[in-house]
Image 1 (tube, one colour):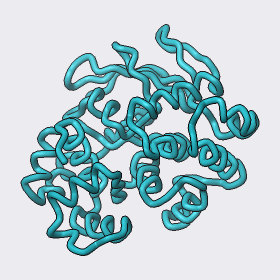
Image 2: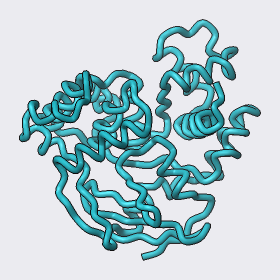
Image 3: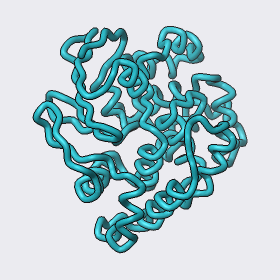
Length: 272
């Protein structure tokens, strides 16, 4: 199937460090969370995809977001304008609660290649194999598979201190009904009860898992960039929460897009 797109780059979006459920096979991006999906962008204004409906693709890739309005809302300052221009074509994804939770627990004190390696290893060990357009793929590891296989099996993947966090998350998802349909504050409360989910991981889950565009995750790199370019706004804010409050108040309801643009621009241009 095909879908028309405008102002969208599949490669930029899926390689931007916001999602770890997609694998680049060279000609297609493939994913297997609930079912195998394959997608490519044969031309600037066209996507070709298999294994999902148009509505599902739109949700997964943020294609229903009104980018023109979002950019107009974020026309705040010269630095952000440069980040937006550089990051043209980026969209905020929607990976789902469990995939985002596992991904960003594994991201703690890690880099993108290492996170992808861990996800691939866990998928190969726990996930069901499948084929789509002749591409072999394993299912993203489910919390049920991780829990039922036990903690000892998980230790072989050398996740370090993250091992207990992953198992804790699997236990929590197995014993609680977590859904993006929950009232947001209630969902936040639940997620913060999971070992390894602090404020930064929580914000990543909200933004990239359930498409809460008001979320504004900040890792060490982002905090360094923000201190340099928005130090006058941050003032004496010391804690993560106080800094997040300042930045979300400044960027507004689309703060998540501001975060993605700034992170992408700063990371790829080594801006500190």
